[in-house]
Length: 576
Image (cartoon, rainbow, N blue to C red; front, side, top):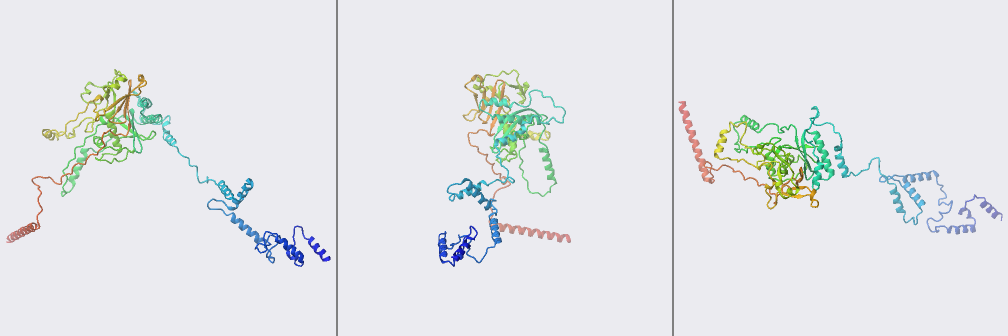
């Protein structure tokens, strides 16, 4: 009893919350059995490795006491590993697990173990942030914004400077202002469904205003728009002040003289030269007359700078009639064709503008008249507006093509509006009089070309097979009292003209090509030149045989030996 009471006293003397270890019951079989029964009710069975580990203050290594410092070091190392940042996402596992657990406890979803992967993905997506310090928002540039940026310079109210700057006060403009009313012209053509949209027309209007302010222009007109593969051409037809000759440098005769002087300085022993002489170059018409009566400026889009086109030459017009090329929109682009075109795309564009203007610019009959009575006989191109002109009714202009007339001279086959004899030269006229007389006696090699006079009626224009050259139509059939007359060219698709009372205008929208009922066929190359002139002095014979060649060589050797013997005898005679 005393031992039991002592044992109970020891048990009662333990601190609350502490249990007895199995070693304390080794001396008491009954208590040891009770303790063993209690251990059997744990999560592990005696034969399992984790048996007894769930009991408080139980350690399989009773002889080893764990070091608290080592345990804290292990915990710190584990936490440091969990705080390791990922090189891809910039997150660490410690914070991620903390956010996952926080999200689970806040939302408390059902079947958390089944959706733990989805919760982890949601937490990662919520943590994604753009690197605003290195990346900026990429705003999509709309086409309308780009067009507005290009046209921004057109909407400047007062532009500083002009062609008159530095020349004193600006001269007073006599007559109509040089700036055309593009919007009024667009209004009339719009009634027939022809032209550009209002925004582009107004931008062209402002662009022409800038051109008039910068260049010394007397008259200006919106000629039209030629389409290209890459860019288009907006064309302005102008007359400038003090037109100067743009072609500088040496003339053809100066170049020939320099070439002859160079030949004299060369050595006498030279290989044979070709006797071919190219045909004489046809000079271009002077500025302000014929094909160069107007000066043309082009730009690709309203707001871009205007570029002045060079004058056109007859060779360029003649070659342009033989080729058909699409424009690219780049003035410096080469024109690859056969026959080779003498120039780049700027020259080809200028040649096509001259051809289209000569064939499609028309006006009501009687609107213009010659300035002088003898002008028609002299085939001049000077005309003026007829103050007594009375516009015919629209019905008459639609029924008969005789109500329309050309006010631009036709281009001849030579490439000029006025024919010129290329054999004549003002500088060497006296020296070449005799040669010209001989040529006249033999027969005139080139006959003078004559074209239809100025202000010819378009009813005399030849059609294209069964297609008439022009088609006239009204702008509307519903209200004939207020309709306008529209004239369309079938030879140059895209060329139009309108007439309403005393108002009329011409415009062109197209690819710059002439209509052809058949496919375009390039010109054939010229025939091959003969290798040698065939005549009595040069004849073609059969090649000799080997025996004949050997006999010819033996005869030559004998003749040379005889010559040597004669020379030797002569030398002996001289010595004696």
